[in-house]
Every structure is written in structure tokens, then in C-alpha cells.
Amino acid sequence: MLLLMLVSCQSGASRFVNKFERFIERVESNASSYSQVEWEQKDEQFQEFVDDYKELKKDLSPDEKRKVGELTIRYYKARVKSFGFGVLGEIGGWLEYIQGVADEIKEDVKNLNLN
Image (cartoon, rainbow, N blue to C red; front, side, top):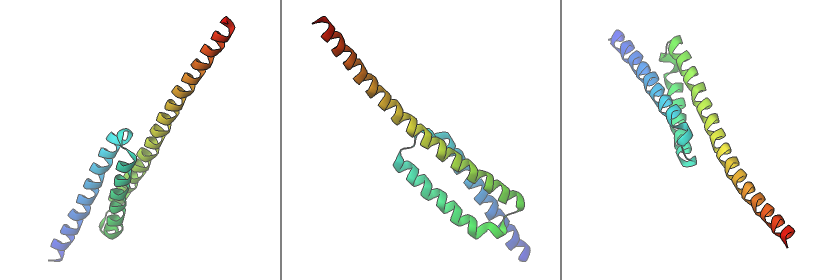
């Protein structure tokens, strides 16, 4: 009976790690396309994994704990990169706006010189 319980806990812990890894892989694949609302949902899901980890930690092997640590780092890396994509997108939009204003000013100056 005790052996059955240990095997059951270990397989539950292993399932947790596998499920967490699939979640991280999906996040990494889609990070650049997530909206702010989607990121908030992913953050909530990530927090659920963190909470589950706290409960399962005692059942995880050292290798599984290391894997969870690596996956956690990968999540934060994807999160930071996505923030960068958002900032770059905003900067790109502002640069286009500034370029448009600059073009208008050039045209106004050119028209003043002709008159």
C-alpha cells in the first residue's frame, strides 16, 4: 500500500512537471502575440503552477525541482521579451508619428520658400 502511494505521488509530481513544461512551451511560442489581457491570464495560470509546486515540492525529485526552476526562468524570460515587443511596437508607432510630423514641417518650410 505504501509503495502504491509513493508511486502515485511520484507520478502526480511527474505529471505536474510535464504539464508545466507544456504550458511554458506554449507561452514561449506565443509570447510576442499575447495582448495585455492574455498576459494577465497567463500570469494567473503561472501563479496556479507556483501554488501547485508549493504543495508538490516534497514529492518532487531533485531533478524535477531543477526542471521547475528552469521552466520558471523560461517563463519570466518570455514575459520580459514580450514586454520588449510591446515597447518596441509603441516606439515604432511614435517614430512613424514623428516622421509624419517632420514630413509636414518640411513641406510647410518648402512652401514658405516658394512664396
